Amino acid sequence: MLSRAPDGEAFLGGRSLASILDEVGAATPAYVYDLGAMATEARELVDSFGAHAQLVAFAVKANSAGAVVRTLARAGCGAEVGSLAELEVARISGIEADRMLLSGMGKSVAAIDAAIGAGARGILAIQVDSIDELERIAARSRALGRTARVALRVNPAIRADTHQAIATGHEDAKFGILRADLPRAYAAIRAQGEALTLVGLGAHVGSQLVRTDAYFDTADALLTLVHEFERGGARLELIDFGGGFGIDYGDGCFVRPRDFVAGVLARTIAAGLEGRTVVVEPGRSLVGAHGCLVASVVATKVVSGRRWAVLDAGMNDLLRPALYGARHRIEPLGPRVARRGGEPGAQLWRVVGPVCESSDEFGEYELDEPLPARVLIRDVGAYGFAMASNYNGRGLPTEIFLHECGKLSVSRAGDANAWIAQRLAT
Ligand SMILES: Cc1ncc(COP(=O)(O)O)c(C=O)c1O
Image (cartoon, rainbow, N blue to C red; front, side):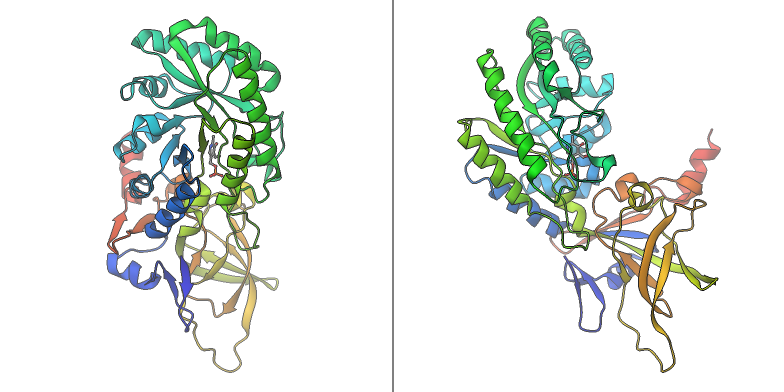
């Protein structure tokens, strides 16, 4: 949890951010994560299910750091993974195969094989994105002499009120199987005999949802479909309502994850399906608010009255603003510096990174002039480092983890020297 001392200095998880960087000798840009707050978030969500059979499958794509995945595994989460590499991170971080789901379209043969071959009976479910994919998975189960546990990812044709790039359940979205095609998908599963077993239905209607309507409409559609499948002879173990719970990026808009859960639990029980495991796949809501990116102001310029502040963090470190126009709060690391008489105070600054792209911009922010030496970019624990790249020959940012026990650990795995060595090795 981010907080401020009376003098304005920023604290994360009860520790001064500046002193965290000093203690580990980290330069900027550096991500700092509060693992204790992530664990609390996860435990609260798991507990909100009460005695109902559940799986809170953390969407590893949001933050794949081992320290994060291990923390959430200990707090009671399973994992939703989108690749072989994410599956391996989840497995080695202690998540059992029967608490894992593999989703995404265009799954590699290696990922499918790992999912089918994991544990005694494979992972909990491979979320199947198309009828074609059913055939590919069945061919791999036969080759491995196993049965693949599959769940159908339904495209409910519901447009969630979120950024168009992260609305995933409408008819034009590339994901999932439309309702009209489900009978054909079910027939295709049965035609594969022992190679496939249908264990559930699921959907993921979008990300950063700050209203419940699309999520609950999707839930109603899924519950109706479960009844239809069961009338057709299926016996489903799980219903996966997906992730997407939005967080407050500073505009006060969000719905508590446990309110999404309460809504789908009530609907599941009202539909007479309480014997089924209810799965949710939160990513952002477990980790997003509990990471920040500390950056230094490396240059300023004033052109035609417009003030530009250049940070040492850019779109390669945090892509969301350039990719989605996302806005993250940018604030001084603090403490506040007393202004001398005659200094101008708060000004509007266009805050940008050092990358050679005009889209390498975080937005316009009110910051004191003279500018603080270091700033923090808030709410970057999800889809922050996970989307970072080496573009422009820039190293990946440092990551610092504040563990529940108070210990700090650091990862500098992808620094610029690693990038130089890799490029020269071609
Ligand atoms: C299939 C699936 N499940 C879960 C998630 C997690 O979404 P969020 O981080 O918004 O909770 C995603 C993210 O896009 C996804 O594609």
